[in-house]
Image 1 (cartoon, rainbow, N blue to C red):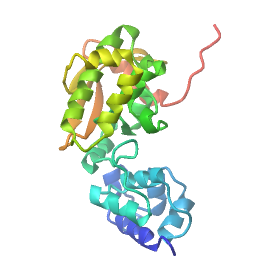
Image 2 (image 1 turned 45 degrees about the vertical axis):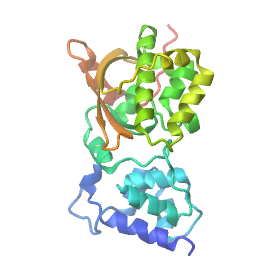
Image 3 (image 1 turned 180 degrees about the horizontal axis):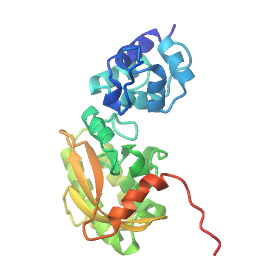
Image 4 (image 1 turned 135 degrees about the vertical axis):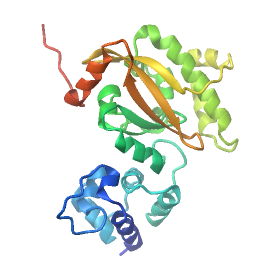
Length: 282
């Protein structure tokens, strides 16, 4: 079969992972080492039949998006992720929405079950969100290309700004520009991801061009933000950041701001989930 090696590799990685390592319950009747096939499929957002075909080495060539999802589900290291793409005859992604989530970041995210949390790149591309982050901030997985970067959307798409009250927009814009300058300076000179994003924003946003000309530089390490939630209303949170060793990825988690009613509002997120609400005509 064309992808027999790919299937064998997936099976070997699946069998080494304990269910509790990925937030699953290890029951007493489990007969197989590691995860079941259907559990990997669920974690990767694929059907059980499709994943079974992959492990058999049959079926069509998996997409880059599916490979990225499998790498996250199986907690692959960077070297293992690259090997997975090689076995599937796909180019290894370098940055962008398909970036590999650092296993340590993903492990921490899995353990943060009672607070909104997500992993993003230094260019503010969302890599993975837990359910509470989706409920608070919206699902960012649908964005592709340049639009995958929230900084890009912030300066080019007015819809992105609805997340924050209008009076907070200047503060957020300044912080995004300063953070992007810090991230660009930290990247290797041969890496064009940051420079291409900056050039695009300079061309499309007069606001960004003005802020960039001020040369402010500062990573966003911790912020107090006001989020304009469509159901809960104004939610004030502290946004805390943990940086990966190379600075290319960040784990963000959100806690309620003290002295506000945001504690009760964040507790409601689990109830609200990601369902859409239609306002009553009255």
